Image (cartoon, rainbow, N blue to C red; front, side):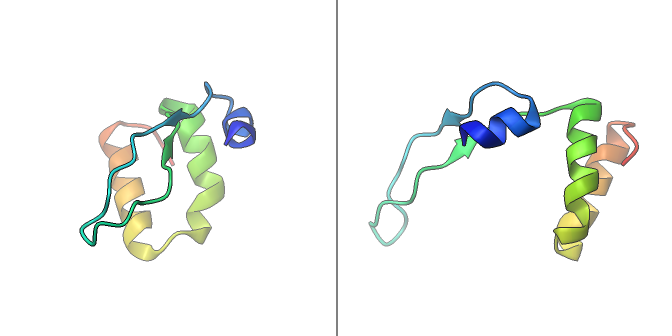
Length: 70
């Protein structure tokens, strides 16, 4: 995760708390990094061809609302 954060040029990833899922099993660790504006758009432009169509729609509409071209 540190390498991903370095690639994205953001702060070190923050580990979220782990909680058991509905079956009572513990889930895997989840991390979060935050990107905004043009830096995020740059990364999404590279990743967009690999997303499912629903995700592409969600990403493009989010950036459109923020007036950031994708």
